[in-house]
Length: 331
Ligand SMILES: [Zn+2]
Image (cartoon, rainbow, N blue to C red):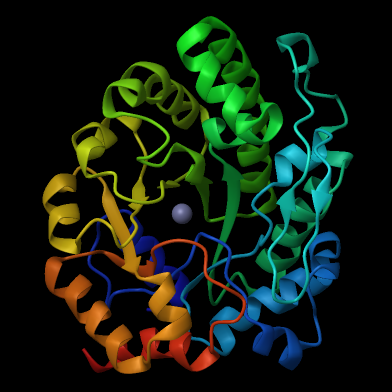
């Protein structure tokens, strides 16, 4: 089995020759930027460089599946959010919330000609063509709730969820429309699977009841319209919501270290596959031995795909990320 076959087999619940290593959240290192000569922030708007930098996650670090898009805020940036594009050791983030009222929430005709989405799609096309026979090429969209927080402001969203839920529902519908189009464009460009980064819907943002009434139906509707395998990521301690996740229809769930591997596989119960949950603080600060222990714990619990639990700091040493592939090989 090559890396792509191994990842796609595990993603859909089959039996690979060994567990694959993958990442869906942002992951690059300053060391990799130095060795490839492709640096943030320029890579976010340069498909050739972004593809080359991200392929190093396979070639140097041993990842079977690589998420070729680093920036998490592609859709808001294309829809007018001002960006801080960051630095070699700092991931991009948004600086403004362009939607004030539902009248502002319009998807332009030229969505995919706008940056950075034009570069995202071009990066996936390049990656598929150049590396797609030996590694899985993953795309990425935001989750609708996280996107709305970027477009309308975190506090506004949380307040209106209580005061004006119909306005939030209208906003979310527009987000879903943009995100479904973007995901399907990524599949057309050659993505093997697309992740949905719903970091903004973490446990501290939404109660289980609010998730079930306001967001779960949105996730379900959106995922039903995406024409390929999906990997949903939600940050943090979502144990109180695990029983609801199967209803989203996702292929796989990327879980964080706040949920133990054993709890996660028990909750999934074969209804979806799971990938996780290496602690990203430990990827930065601990050593290879602790990381190998976490890989072992995940494999023992039956986690299908080993991955970081969330986005990793660009300051992570390559040696710590490489320790994950080495631990799987030794298993
Ligand atoms: Zn996360």
